[in-house]
Amino acid sequence: MRVSVLKASVVAAIAAAAFAAGSLAPVTGQSRAGGVPRVNGKPDLNGLWQAVNSANWDIQAHSAKAALAMRQGPVVPVPAKEVLAFGAIALFASMTNIVSGFLITDRMLKMFKTDRTPKPDKGA
Image (cartoon, rainbow, N blue to C red; front, top):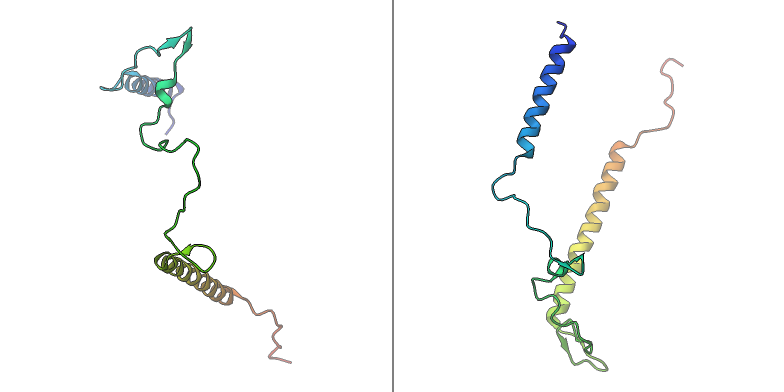
């Protein structure tokens, strides 16, 4: 079945017009915002970059603070036992992941390994 070039062109033009009509019409709530406020002829972008959270609450210069719960050690403070317990759990989980990954990879390599030794002829 052969389609004429004229029919194909008409179908393509209708499809393009339908796409343009559907994509160019603004959807409710998607209207363009008013003009960008300007200061001395340049756009004032300060409002766009302002933080809406409390991420900048401690920007001023300050001394370092301990990030972990610490306890008094023999010479210097050391992490508390709860922090060490979390570290031990993380170490166990990561080592389990590494060892089991090695075992699975090793098993797969053995499974796909081919025997390269030549087999003797049965007729000789």
